[in-house]
Amino acid sequence: MKSYTTLLTDLTNGILLITLNREDKLNALNKAVIGDLNDVMDEVYANAEIKGVVVTGKGNKAFAAGADIAEFKGLDEEQGTALARRGHSVFNKIEMCPKPVIAAVNGFALGGGCELAMACHIRIASENAKFGQPEVNLGLIPGYGGTQRLVQLIGKGKALELLMTADMIDAHCAQKLGLVNDVVQTVELIDHCKAMVAKIASKAPFAIAQVIQSVYAHFKDGIDGFDTEISLFGKCVTTEDFVEGTAAFLEKRKANFKGK
Ligand code: COA
Image (cartoon, rainbow, N blue to C red; front, side, top):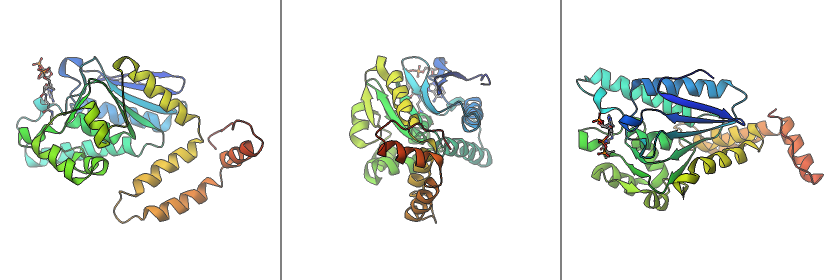
């Protein structure tokens, strides 16, 4: 693994733990963090040793308290658009990662922090997590996919409420809305997320990648998700893991997937 200025990485048993490492700024996402996230995701795509990812924030206070507001000063329209475009590109890379990416939300997930969590495939929150899209307090709207992914996850009515009131919600409210999958004790958060990645990684990797692609096809303009599912199902039956998985079931044994 490369080393990163703004991220800590730990690859153990095929699970990469990525920790945003700006605790003194509540892990705010400045340009350097966005650049490092882009590069670490390139490693995730390319490195066959990495089976899945957990993303979290350093410290016990914040996952990420948003984009770095200090970098907003003096932006013109062109720079603002470029900033949002760059964030979109990196977060799309996270979302379309063929390996599972789980957000371990360990505190404030505000603005870009909430958007980062939403770009991950699954979100698990600690008891002290707090979520919100407070951009309108700054004269802004979310710029890293928040207006779209929040609607996808919790529906239009509640999304509009959170986006327009800038209200912060706690972990249990976020779970009730479907913004997070589960809420766990803070001390259990990382192990819980790692266990979930390990469980997913024990399945056929090609099939997992096709699940991700097929589900996100639902949200892509001009693409029929049902057609996508049909063709990806067809691709799965050409894999060695399909032969192994079905044989293992019939032989009443555990499948030994090779990712081929
Ligand atoms: N960008 C840049 N710096 C940030 C930040 C952000 N989004 N969020 C927090 N920080 C910095 C603070 O400026 C402070 O730095 P300092 O110690 O050098 O002054 C440090 O992180 C600690 O934050 P602080 O505000 O003192 O902590 P708090 O416990 O009083 O409040 C929050 C916590 C999350 C409620 C508050 O930091 C906040 O509202 N942050 C901004 C949230 C936001 O609007 N995000 C959307 C951005 S688009």
